[in-house]
Image 1 (cartoon, rainbow, N blue to C red):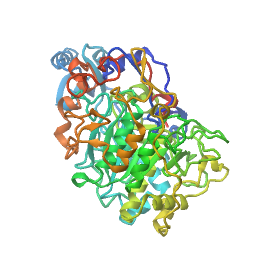
Image 2 (tube, one colour; image 1 turned 90 degrees about the horizontal axis):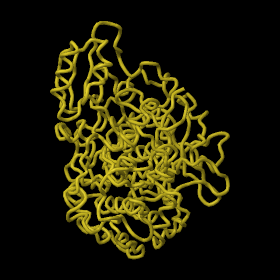
Image 3 (tube, one colour; image 1 turned 30 degrees about the vertical axis):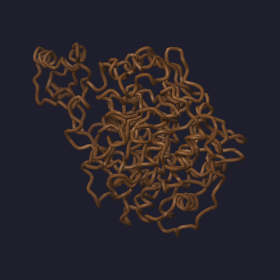
Image 4 (cartoon, helix red, strand yellow; image 1 turned 135 degrees about the vertical axis):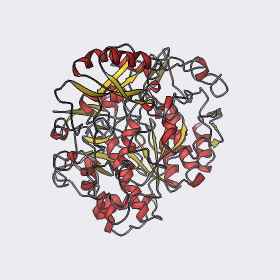
Length: 616
């Protein structure tokens, strides 16, 4: 049985293998060690979870795999500065260079088959992989073989019914507050992705800004609005060859808050939500959906919680906020839903398991999906088990779970309510294109009212049932629902963190302080958020989050186009030998304001906030 990654940004684990520690140092963990323990909980971390992935045919990653013979074609990636040495080694081993590939800091070559193991041992060689043509999301992953494929998911949910009617999410922007997005096929079409500010701990490193060094954000963005470059607009229905997300013509606005370990703080996430709200229509943007695959185990009531309050402000300004319920499983009376999913104004999404078919009649709620209790239940559930989306090569998740989660060189399998939330975010984009004036309240009522009840699943686990876009397509827009009690946002920032905290050099980030050690007055912040003025240029909560990476204007026009992602920005050097020099974490934007020792130098992270069961 294959195993995929499962989890959420939540409970972190302090299990750190030597191999993982070495890899994390390469991709940019800062010195002196931060125990990165906050929670972006939604995506489904690739940990354990057997299931339909076992149905994928062996060798399906390649259209043609290398067979026995005298030589093979390979792709060789080298450490920066070792290219000539590696080329010389290939010649010594009897091979020849075919084509240089600077975007991956490597080249294609033809080498004797028996020399491949020796080539992998050459100093400076990062990887040697077969050079063969692959499917972006090929027909071999059609409904008969893999119900976790996005082709199957778009069938199950009824997304393809929307496509048939001409609705593909065009003109709708979906903000994704996560670990960033990698420029892989499926997310590189002109205008597909626009970068908001990078608010993560990697923002001051030029080769990591905006990029997803963790792997979660890329997986989520692919589910929501991925579209393979070879996909043909107007011909999405029935396309089993090219990768297509739920809303393939929607645009992703990426706001990065988490680093290579998924590390972030509630204060960063609140700042990100505020940015989305206050820039939702800037420079041609039309942000109508916010995917928040993040949550904490806070028990602070939502009606005073600062994180829940920030998310509510997005709803009040016409943004449909989709949250994952979490991956903490089922508890009947109290429930296990995370903050801010427990806020009834938001759309809280749990997961379903397809059980090997593309019909909804036999779907079940998997054991990991967080349940509701007597006060709050999931609003609905959506596919979230063994979902195949875009792979982020070189990311921590890819490094840690590739042996069990990788489908092929372009695709990765994951489970969790993060994936489920992404499915619903894509679905919301389709409905909004069809009904541009629909309010968040009516949209929520439409999707919950057309959901299909699952036989045998308790209401505490499934809420109103499973997402059914085929019914939503034909349904009338419901009246505006009653508004639940709103959050005042005057509660404790520290209680909003729950039990998961950032720790650096033995110092825990705690109390009413943000990541810059600036005092956080929740009542004053709530007033600013209500007025839409918590950001002032690059300043939030009194500290400068500006500079080239955090300024309010840095995102504009920054869609990913061709060569802008070549060279050092996405070559092997992006993920190895990162120089976390002092200048990255000092200077005007950070000096005198970080919460511990005035810097974020160095890299000995002792825990993974996004690993294992911590993913939603």
